[in-house]
Length: 107
Length: 121
Image (cartoon, rainbow over all chains, first blue to last red; front, top):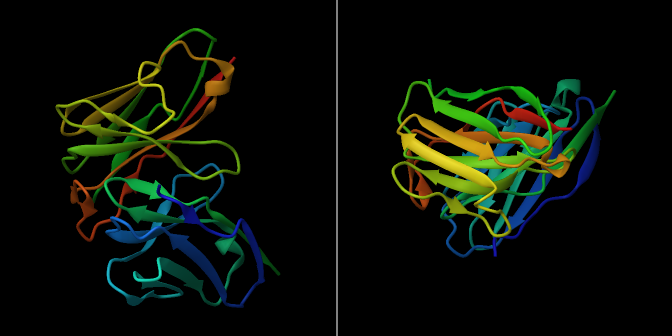
């Protein structure tokens, strides 16, 4: 199968740091993407990992461990506008999304 | 660059009718496009992989006769919801990447259309 797991919901405070985890089955794996999606809108690309390690892009960073089938998205200096769903997607023969994590940023 | 256009943005149709949704890659060629549907507060569910010049690959549980996919050119894929019913009401969204190669994506994310909100009455 292509089981991808994420926590359903998370809450954090403005200005804080939050880590959103994603686990997946490792067979046939070719890479992992993170997307942000606001309600009623199309997903927007955040980050992409093919090799193990940390990729940093401003306030967003993503980490990958291929042997463990594990990734996380790190959001720093949280802003209210970061309240959204965060989706990880694993690439194999196609492009399948995880269930998404709804993040609520509180003042 | 890498813009994907989807049309219409929303559509309301009567039960039993068919609805066609278009997905175009505006500034790149896409041999592969992906079609997803999304119910409220749920994630994107991959319905099918659209392949230019050949049959689409449908995910398990998706009826190929109900959701007709045609990928007749390198810039256009269409999804037709046939004999629509109220339970087909959903958000349908397509995506493509200029660098997608079967089984991998070469350092390029998928780009999404803005989605089509279908309501069947």
